[in-house]
Each structure stands twice: as C-alpha cells, then as structure tokens.
Image (cartoon, rainbow, N blue to C red; front, side, top):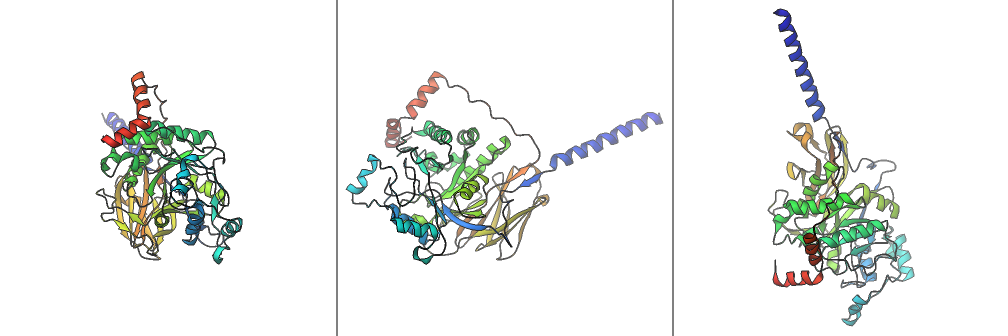
Length: 448
C-alpha cells in the first residue's frame, strides 16, 4: 500500500513539475525591436532624418510645380523626398519625368509645370542652397499607381526604373490593388498600400477598419508579396484616414502569426503647399542616402509623425482633433528606444504623454518628462505573453509620433498562408464588373 502510494505521489509530482515547466516555457518570449541596430548615442550615433515618400506636383494632379514643391520641403527641413506623381515615375528634380497627355490640362488652367535648374538641384542635394548646410536626398523611382483611380485604390511603388510604370492606368477596387502590387514586385520595386481609409470610406463607415473581410483582404496582399512592406497609417491631414491606425493594429494581428511584420508609413501626400507640413517620417540611419533609405523602409527603423489628426471614438484616440500645420511647434519624437529582456525603455522630446498599445488595446499610459526614462515592463502586465506586438505613441503640443511594432516572439513556428482559391465563374464576373471605372463612377453617383 505504501509502495503504491509512493509511486502515485511521485507520478503526481512529476506531472506537476512538467506542467509548470511547460507553462513557463510557453510564457517565455523575446521582444524583437525594429530599432535593435540603431546607435542612439556616443561615437557613431545615427542621425534622425525627416523625410516624405509620397508627394505630388503639376506633372500629375497637384496645384504646385516640382521646383516650388521641392524648395518648400527643403525650407521645412526635410532630409529626403520622393516625388510620386500618379502613374509618373519620379526622376532627378532637374529633369522632366514622363509627360503624360492626361495631365496637359495643367497648363491650360494656368498651372506652372517646371523642374529645378541644374544649379538649384546640385545646391539642394548638397545642402548649399540658401546655406542650409544639410542636403536633401532625391529619392527617384517612386510612382503612385493606379492612374486617377476613381475608387482611390492607390499603391505607392519605390525604386522602379524610370521607364517603368508611366501611364499605368490600373483597374478599380480589389483587382487594382493586387495588379499594382504585383506589377511593382515584378519590376524589382518595394511598395506600400496608400491611405486605405479613403478606399474603405471610413469617414462615413469607421467600423470598416474592424471588418474581418477588409482585414483579410489587405492582410493577404501584404503576406503574398514580400515587396509589399505595409500600409500608410497617417496621410496628409488625415481627413479620410483618421482610423487607419486602428486598421494597422488589425493587420499586425492578422499578419504576425504568419511571420510578417506590417510597417506603418506616414506621408504628406501633398497636392498643396500647406500639406507639406502635415504627416511625415523620421528615419534612424547611419547616413542619409538612397541605400540607407531603402534599407530603413524594409527594417522599420523609423517613426511616423503627424501634425494633423481627427478625433475618433476608438480607444487609442485621440479624443480631440488637432491641426498644427505651419505653427512651428516642435513635434514629439523618441530619442531612444531599447529592449532589456521583457522591458522596453524609451526617452522622448517635446512630448507629454506616451501610450503603449498591444493587440489593438491601450495597455499603459504614462506621463513623459523631457530627459526622463519611460519603461514598459511586460512582466507586470497580465497576459503579456499572449501579445503579438507592442507599439508606442507619443502625444505632445506639436502632434503625434508613432513607433513601429515591437514583435513578441514566443518561438511558435509561423503559419503558412493557404493558396489562393480559384474564383468561381460568378465571382470572376463580379470582380470584372467591380474593376471597371463605369461601375465605380455609377456607384459614386448613386451611392452604395
């Protein structure tokens, strides 16, 4: 009897120990930082370079000519700029890109079409123009596809050859998105999805960012194409994109189990001078050139900033809208973000509050004081081992600054995306109809 009881107790103890060990192993994880390689301080510290990768001129549908637009960004202190006119692949700013007949109306309505002189161009890319002392890099090969899409299913392509993508008309709606991403991929470029809230009409339907169909649609595009890096989370004055940060959280939760991060971009999308001081990015780079800009787009070692944001009812807010364009107020910015085991440690400038977001929920809010360290200790937060990611946002008198996602890696093998099912004949017919401009035009005229 004693022997039997002893064996039973031994087995019970062994099961308990194994269970505790299994739970401990299951809760162990690593925080993977997009800023892991950044040198923040001391000798060899990397620079913080302000830039914009999505802007327009009178070479497509903007009100401002290229020469004026470039000088405006330069005077605002930008360090790099990509001109991505609609279906016009950007070239050096002292040359004409492809001149599409579609945009010949610009001169007819009195708008100027002009590039920089050779002297102006050299002065800007070396930093001697107006004695600024800091260059602004011309990022060539950018193009916003599709050409004047009525449904605003736009995709920005980068690092394309200058003879590729000019006049790319594209289809409407879902078909147009994949057509553009596949085209950029086939031509060796990188891409991101532009202002998805515009296509989803989130002004009138903010709940669309939480719709599983929409999340899966954009998520599958990002997963199917390695060259599609992510999506814009901030765009221009965020008039039609005020909820795109919530969609970003949903896309992170959808894509991370498959092993792919979703990078959140922020661009001015400027068609008017005032919007050059709206939404932009700050890249952490060893040096400011095309190669480092491309690598940073892929690594996510940058911050997304906006000076204009509409209030929204969702938890991450903000509750009140703000518009700080042309007010010359310093914008909030992270000055260091490092990881120590299960802690994320940050410092910031021009900020008064930081909120930490995981799996679409605000998990912690903290006051921020200049020069003081802010710490997020995930070991103090119940359920943190179930998080897929953590990201941070700063709020200050000069706007909002968002970090990229810190991925929570618990060692689970990534899922494999299923092969895309062949559509039925009926589905093919519906897709063809939805891809037509006449369908979109009638839909816009008659409403949903």
